[in-house]
Image (cartoon, rainbow, N blue to C red):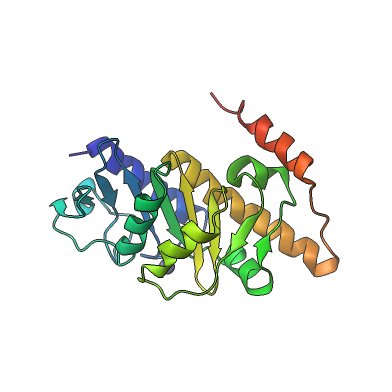
Length: 211
Ligand SMILES: [Zn+2]
C-alpha cells in the first residue's frame, strides 16, 4: 500500500539527514493521501536502512491499517494538523539547530531573504513551548502558521507543512540556510528586513521556478 509515497517519504527523510536537519532517529515525515489515509515514519528508527514496510499507514479514522512498527510519538500532533489544515498534505518535523536557535532569541525568523519568501512564503513565527510527543505541537502549528509553510517550535525544532512533500522539504532545507544567514547578520548588526511588497514579489517569482 502506497509503496511509491513511502519511498518518497524515506528519500525526503534522508535528504533532511544529508542537510544536517536531523540526527540519528530524530524528527518525522508524513504524507496525507487524497482519500484521507496518511503515512507516518516509525518512532525512534534511523533513516539510512529504513524500508517502506517500516512506515505506518492510518485511515482517516486514525486507525492503523498497515504497518507493524510503532508510529512516531508525534502522531497525535500530526493528526491535529491534518484535521485542522485541509490544504496540508505533508508535514516534516526536524530539530534543525540554526532555525531552532533563532527561536531562542526572537519571536520570528523575519523575511530577510528572497529564499525564505520562495519556500516559506515569508517570515516564520516562533511558537510557545510544548513538550515533544504532545498534541500541543500540532495545536501551536495551526495557531502560529499564519499562512506560511513553517513554524519554529520554541526550545524544540521546526515543523514545515505543504500541499506537497516537496514544498515541506524545501521549506525545511532552505529555512535552515536563511536561519544561518540571519544569525550571521545579527551577530554583527541589525539585519535589514524586506518590505511586504518585496516579499510578495519574491513569492510570485518562485511560482515560475523549476520544471
Ligand atoms: Zn521533536
